[in-house]
Length: 124
Length: 124
Length: 124
Length: 124
Ligand SMILES: [Fe+3]
Ligand SMILES: [Fe+3]
Ligand SMILES: [Fe+3]
Ligand SMILES: [Fe+3]
Image (cartoon, rainbow over all chains, first blue to last red; front, side, top):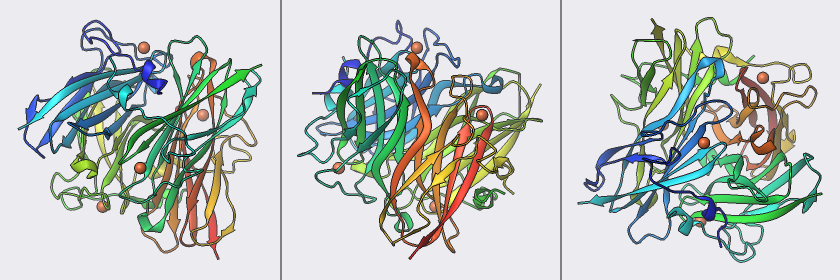
């Protein structure tokens, strides 16, 4: 049995600053080029310091009926104060999806671990 | 509730070629520099082609009583036949750990998704 | 002397499909949150198949007078046909910059290697 | 012309703590599975703190006569004091190479930028 699965935290991003927010269309056409924006802190800001920051996002897609999620992208936010530069935990990516399913976003805070959110996409 | 957690597959690496194998000492001293080797296919080889390969490993440490796993490393295997070069899913990393806990290794096959293994480490 | 530097290819993205395109404001305020979009193929499309694809972008910032570039982000495009899903080499990231300098984007094609583009940013 | 190429620093690892050290056989057989160890600080230790650390290594292979380097692996060292855990900038990877060429290692320090080293490999 998975151990890490017990540590993939979830919640409502309106009240929990670590939950990734997925901005994606609810229905799209098959293989249409779509933009998906991932962010954190839309409601409550998360710190961005060397000591405490969002390190990365991953985005997966789980097609309806599929046994395995497919990884769409990995996004590492690299500057957290180095030479007074900051990369914020916000990213927009572009993908083509063949059929209905579920977007799953994963984020990692260097202090508070792994957090997940998901959103259904209907392919019409 | 986590959805991805339901797709973190596990098993015995002796019979399932996707499960990462953790080669680590069972007991170490606090903050001692230790080597941890991660591999796949020690018993049954996994393909390494453009169409089907192990893409990456991640390694986490969950200290006893901790609420959050800490990421120790991410290792992307990048060549799967490009110009006849191949990177095999084997990596050795070096870490220092302060207290007893659990190593958790995660691997990603571009076809068969996410797989997990874990091993206890006793700090004496 | 650097060897890899001889293999960081450049060119005009209007005629060379591997050169990353940087979409960024030319002048910004110090520490203002700005969006930077990186893409490839704005003029000539690059293939996106298992055999041949853009694997990642990196984005650096070289402040005026600085000796060292700072890495702002790393973006791995992970799906190139797996289960008929595709991640396109387009990403938007959000950063805060303290002073004038140069954005440097790096891209990697699994067949045609490393490509670079840059754009000045004036902090007013 | 490449700008980043001017910032790929090199030097003798015996006197410069940022230069990656490549531990690899000088001659191998074609397509033999070989181990390559990359490290930093074999002679002079580099700090490993949140404020100042080695963030990642990349490893490339440039076959003799080839126009493009192929990326073999990317290795992110993720813990720099989080919950008193540390990932050291040392990694061993396993690859198969078809012909003679040059290994090129790249490292990134979050304060001192990009550093390169290389080593010839003879395929016999
Ligand atoms: Fe946090
Ligand atoms: Fe597989
Ligand atoms: Fe190409
Ligand atoms: Fe340094």
